[in-house]
Image (cartoon, rainbow, N blue to C red; front, side, top):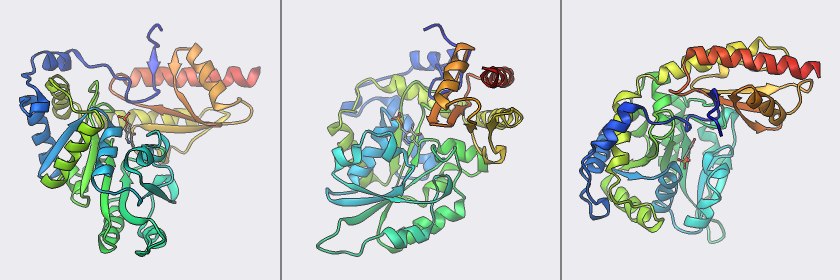
Length: 350
Ligand SMILES: *Cc1c(COP(=O)(O)O)cnc(C)c1O
């Protein structure tokens, strides 16, 4: 496929910059299965430091980060409390069931967030009949919730209640960097409320691959064991770790540009007849908007946009998702707004 003009399907579509490729080419590497890739060791130490944890484990994907963390902290027959719109429920191929033998008990609330009262409702008292409540999961930012940021007070309420109930706590921080860019909080300000935290380098940070899990030494040793079991322990992975280190140092501060672009895109879309969006709900780099019946379905609208050189993803029958990232600048966003307007107008005329 010829590369389309403006690709807003996801912040995973970014290609490594020339500087990142240079950092990868120059990486000092070893065999990480034998524990001696110095660049992987550097990255793990850097992530542990940023998260305020004892240790971290580099893994190929965010899915493996979450699943190794779940496997490390549960036994088959246990239950994980997570929002019904969680990535682990919708986009990880049922792996909590397949790899850990656990059930998920879905929590409810607006924008993918829930509060401590949900734990009181969903937590199960120990019983010979029931699954054992074991782990609470929070996703920040919340992907299907529109890139929503959890207020830190709400995280403190939920994780505090979880601790009182004897539950372990995992943060799916695939986009924790966006949460930090939006609030000015440090990663450790979030991470201190959790036993384990996952994060991705391959989303807004723009690395080609890689994620990590941070926690105390004992739990990270278990995560590393399950990484091996799941087939995710790599050899000269310092080449990828170099990209992640470069992304952490060079691409974190600029996430606020993506947030400003997302807000601009949302404000543009809000002006277009037939489309609806509340720009106030755009807190980070994600923009979700609704396509009115006069225009057709979200999927039809995305096909039309594609023919005009703008890529977005239908995410529900009437809902379209657009994500800002380091390969789209402000001019590209303005161009995308014009194309969206043309596509909407053409649809109404048909
Ligand atoms: C992308 C993402 C992941 C992990 O996805 P991979 O494609 O496996 O790297 C996990 N959680 C959330 C919230 C995500 O958006």
